[in-house]
Length: 278
Image (cartoon, rainbow, N blue to C red; front, side, top):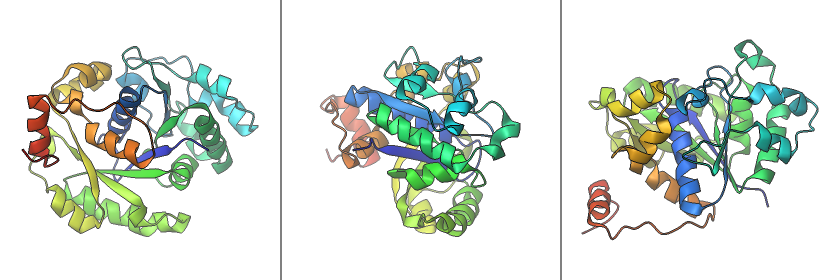
C-alpha cells in the first residue's frame, strides 16, 4: 500500500504555501515519530532550502532529472538527494528546481515517477506544488494526491477570484473536482483586516481544515534561514499546523502520539479555537 501523499497548492504566489506545507510535514513527523518526505515541486520559485538555511543545497530536483527522465530513480538515490534539517531530522527535504528556464520541460511522467518512488520510500509524503497549473509538477501532484490542501488568505482577490479561476475552472479539466480540496486559511499581520474563515468557506464552498497563523518573527525567520527555529521556539510557531496535521493523520491512518492537551495553556488555546469546550 502506497504512503499517503498530501499536496499543498496556493491560490496565489507568495502567500505562505511552502511554509505551511513544511510545517505540516514537521508536525506529522513529530507526532508520528516516522519519516516524512517533503518534495518541493515548485518549478519556478523554489524557496524551502533557503528557509531552512541551505543556500546551496548539495542536491535539488533538477540534479536527479536524468533518473526521472529514464524512470530509474531508486529509493536510495532519492534519500541521498534529500536534506535532513538539523531540528527536524525525520523530515527528508528534496529541494526544488533551480533551473527556472527548464520548468516547462518537466514531463508528467517524470513527476509521476518521482511521486511513486517517494511513496515507496517514506511512510508519508508532503508535496509543495506551488500555485501554477501550467506545469507537469503541479498537475501531477494534484492528480496523485491523497489529500489536496488549497492555501489562501483573507484577501478577497485570493480566495474569490484566484480560487474560482484555478479550482473551479481549471482543475476539473484534469479530473480534479473542487470539492476534493480542503481549504487552509493563512493569516499574516498584513491581512488581519481580511475576511473571516466562515466568509471564505461560504464564498469558496470549501471546508477550512485549519488556520496557519504567522507573525512578524515568522517573516524574519524565513529571511534569515531560521524557519525551523521559529517552528520550535516561537509561541506562534510551536503550534503552527498542529490542528491540520492531526486531522490529516487521522484521515490517513497515521498513528500519532497523543497531544498533551491537559496542560492549561493548551486547553485554553483549543477553547479559543473552538476545538474544546471548557
